[in-house]
Image: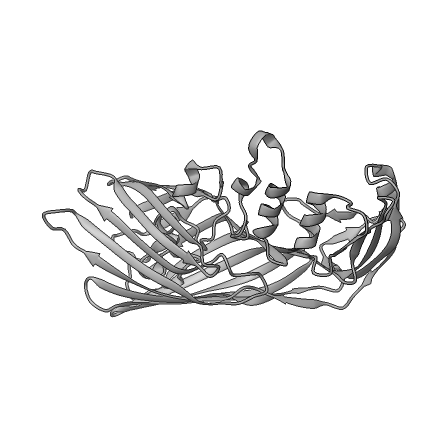
Amino acid sequence: MKKIITIFVCMLIISPLYSQNPISVGMGGAGTSHLSGAFAIGHNPAGLANITDSTDFEILLPSAYFGELNNGEINVQDFTFENGYVNDDDKQKILNQLDDLTRFDLNSRITVLAFAYTPKDKKAFNFAFAVTEHILGSAGIPADLVEFGLYGNTPEKNYKLDDLSSDMMWYRSFGATVSKKVGSISFGATFNYLQGNQYIDVDFDKTSIHTNDDYHLTLNMHADGKIAGAYFDTQNDLKYDYKMFPTPAGSGMSADFGLMYDYSKNLKFGASFTDIGYLRWNSESAYSYKMDADGKIIEISDTDYIDSLFQAMDFVDEPTKAFSTPLTPRLTIGATYYIEQNKYFDNLTLSAETNIYVQEPYSPEHSNIISLGAKLNILPYLPTIMAGYGYTYSGDSNVSAGIGFESKHFDIYASAQNTLTLFSNQMEGSIAAGLRFKF
């Protein structure tokens, strides 16, 4: 039996890609129609049967993906000022970068463990199992709040914060994937049991800060929301149950479906519909709450006073009925063309895909609507070169690149997304690396 152990590490910082391995990252996010084996888990389950060698067993050790941790509108460079001083022109520059409401989004995954098995009997199904942590979040920041922070308490000005919001969901998935190739068609499905660990949702209404002519501030705040897997203590501080094996606050189900079609020896098509499902937060862990506060902050720098103000808020939390939250399904299609060995190179893979549907509740602006990628092997004993381009729903572009070495006994890959920003102060780049041993 030929065994493959894959040690797979990704460190992706502020990335719009929705992928978990260095091959797709290096190819601009494109992978729906060409990823194979354990690398296909979470991307296109049909790829589990898309193994071209004699691989029988793969193990995917802890890997991580952190993406969509930006709003595509402002970056570190916008906050870099001469001599560290922010003048009025700099402040206006920042405000001009913002809409009335700016959203910041987080989508992270950590694959704790995964393995895939390919039976020798080609009539049998390929099988895989994976345990993955998911953290999704979104925050709405009104431009008035940023303006207040930049200009301070200018007398007799009212800052509206009605659109201020924040939500976060943390859950763990236990997924089983089955896949099979019949003729020129590969099909696969992943079924996940979801363990809900934490949910927090807060929305503000009729909330504002008014600066008085004596430079005091009048705060009016009204907020409500739901939480699960967290609680407020007697001081109105939110407490979390962060540990390796938290007490479940809910459960749910999700599924991924995928197809791959070998149109010819060189041309392949793929499609996947992923993250279809929901989480239901149980009544024993779910609470609804309301916060109301109307008061005058006498001294903004007096933290003791500010703390006492929040403790004095009219705060009500009470158990609520079980409620459900949806995941973020997406439908992706792609095509891959393979150019075989010739006098110029050993082989070349060209891939393109598009996310034709990405559903809320979490903002999809930073997902690639188009991904283009290439993977070139010049000679069998020379490094593999990867390159890619992505165009997002928000109109931003990103360039990816990667390098790999494939041998008889191991494969190693390293790649980066938004490579141009890795060498600037914008800090929007991403890096990923993977190592696979063959026995």
